[in-house]
Image 1 (spheres, rainbow, N blue to C red):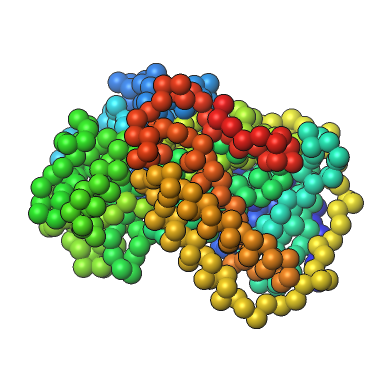
Image 2: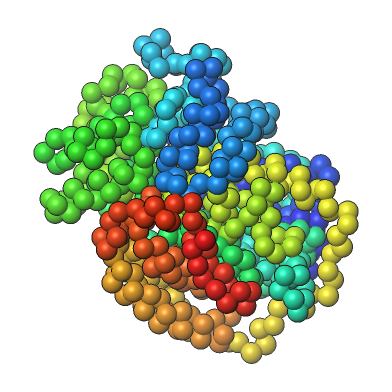
Length: 548
């Protein structure tokens, strides 16, 4: 039997953005946190490298801002970058207060000449001018995730709902789209196979990105663009969906296609090599292996295609064995289990879809276009990342925006009432499906053609072909969704098709190469498009799609 729940704040997503927002709210509000699988199943738990912030006195906010804007290729919002960078250390101090144990200098061997002044060890990643990445060995995301979820489970004002997947947001049905308000969400209880109603004064999307739209990705299975798709259907603008970051170094192995080899490996001196052992990054960028990710990923992609190679190689074996084991214990042990000893030989790598730089448009308070609806983390377009995300700025964005979002919600919560007029979920005219195989087939088809046509290197013809295939799939899925009871697989496929369409439409609009969007038809950047984001507007709000 479907149920109704009432909360002050509904948070959809249980990664760093969602959990940090919940903890910042919970002393003053009744909060629900939804996780469509287990609480730790999101991308945060998989993050290895660390969190970028200014700790060393030789570094500065100005340098971090400059590096972020340079990586963003002319599309970062400078006021956002400034705000996030200047609040970085404060946010990391908050994480430390919540129990996150970052690696300290005292844990690093005397042979490590890279240890930085101060309490914590900092590493350096691609695009950074200084060592400013604070980390917990090579498993920073897992440390952040576990610390925050432990605090969430202990807080009396936070209710955690695992195996609960949002179906769609609930509207107050105001006839004026500009006065539309989000009043909660319809939520599938996956284990009980029924759709419940979660009513809330404010709703926060913290659902992560959409890299599962691609065949090869470093992301967990749940990264299916749910929040982006729901917000789009609800009437929110999205921006910069053409900018999909491909991490250059995902482990190439038939059984482990999603294991990331952290950029911190290159930050500590690892080389990229061709199958014959030759280094090649000097042909592409003077920063070599520490060039921004878009440059490194394109270089690897080009060399693989030039040679007809299935993979290239990452080599840190020239460093001392003790240094490698001390800095990268998780990567070392994982690779060793698969037969690769990174202290003795290179390991095979390929680029893989890693991060969605675009998303639902939000302001500095985390507000979307719809009243009482917010976005935190990878689901959101804040303006921080521009056309390419600087390494280790993602968890930073999550934690900084959790604070500004929570502050804005708390400032208005007492003036909002819960809408009790929400109609129940109606599935009286649907039946159980006996063709679940259709969902898996469509899922596979989508991910294959997105990889082939909308990958690291694109053309207008490839994008148009993808658009045609998406239109056909979308029609099939609409019919399927209308006739059968919803399932988590169907909902994820439905959301992925929406996101794929947004990516392709955005790519067709950007007639230049910039950052993560590289097209052979327009291989140069267009100066007239600098500082002009690709913004898609839902037809029911403004019948317009444009670059502004």
